[in-house]
Length: 543
Image (cartoon, rainbow, N blue to C red; front, side, top):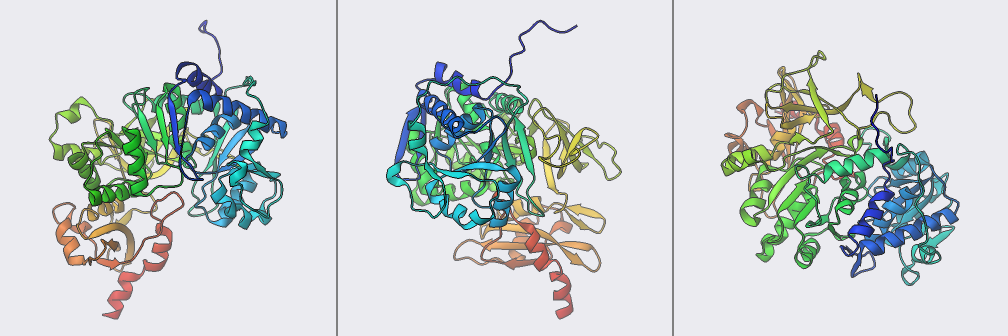
């Protein structure tokens, strides 16, 4: 027997319709690419999104066609989230920090017909245009006065395109499993993989993300999503915030500490979302001007783990709670969070900081388990660690335009090694390819890195496993020093002595000016392993 309820499809266009009707005066503020601050309401955004959908339809865009976006976090990019997906096309967000070959691969693999591009990113497309196979034109997201000169063919002006249409447009209805957005993995060891989200999965993910025990997004929230809109759709925040009429403050291309502080102060944002490197720059700037983040209640960190020193600084200096969130492109991306709980309130500050370093509990909709090397499920005792497996309604089933499933017995292997404690808190031990295998035991490079950056002379740290004649692998620490300082192995190991097991201490330290990062801002360990994997053996031979 089935229920007697309406079978109304879950469609992204419903979000902007709801925002227009029930949160019409809530603000969307953007730092623009052209310069200055743009300010309008959800009512304005909804009307312009309808104009965009109508304009794209006039260009011949149909259900299932792919439209790329190469853009920063601004109000025009926000309009694309609804104008493209709302008409039934697929929005393919492209990371401007990708290598040229990866960008070309993504545009061709997705079969983009047009790319919506910010004016200052147009040179990236000019450099790669010869390799694009399916593109019919480019839409520069600016007005006529700021249109750049270009040698590209069929270049359209966004503002002229939508002003040529009225907003008398009815959002079409279609199956909720229709594709809505396409994001690609960073592809550090091969071609990027496409993850194709549906309207249904996006809507359910947004509802879960906004929940009180998730990101706690409501009409009282004023949020600053520094996480790029080309990184897994800004973690779904534009959808979740629009559902509840939150004030949104988009930072545009200016992600330095001074620019972020200007927006936080002027717009009194209380929820910040971004990767650790962004918050490190903000904290350094706040120290330099002697100010505190008085309006901010919560700082969400994702992309990579936040060190305990950052958690401590946000709380002690700024009165803000650092909320760890973990996920991945294949998960839309939200998986777990360290949301504040009554139990946390009962802990001492030091115990709470340690708990906050974990990646958190699964949000409703995500199931997790860990498997040992023999494939057997391991206990959630906080000690056993193994392959982290997940499943849920917004988690990938198969990669875009590939044969076969991406699943293992109905579960997705995240590629992470993790523990889960009795309360359900998950902690990433390492990526499976990054864990250090020493004398039959595993050492977490992530834990070592997070502990090392607490050293007063260390600005950034990366740990890799280096070959060792006796122990198979041993930790090698590469450290970027704080400006004007030097870092030594002795001082770091002395600092780490009461923070990690003695046999975890690095065997060697190399001071470097900078560390490589992937297009998503994570440490890029592949070239470091290629360069330094035999470092310990070479040092021993030289001695």
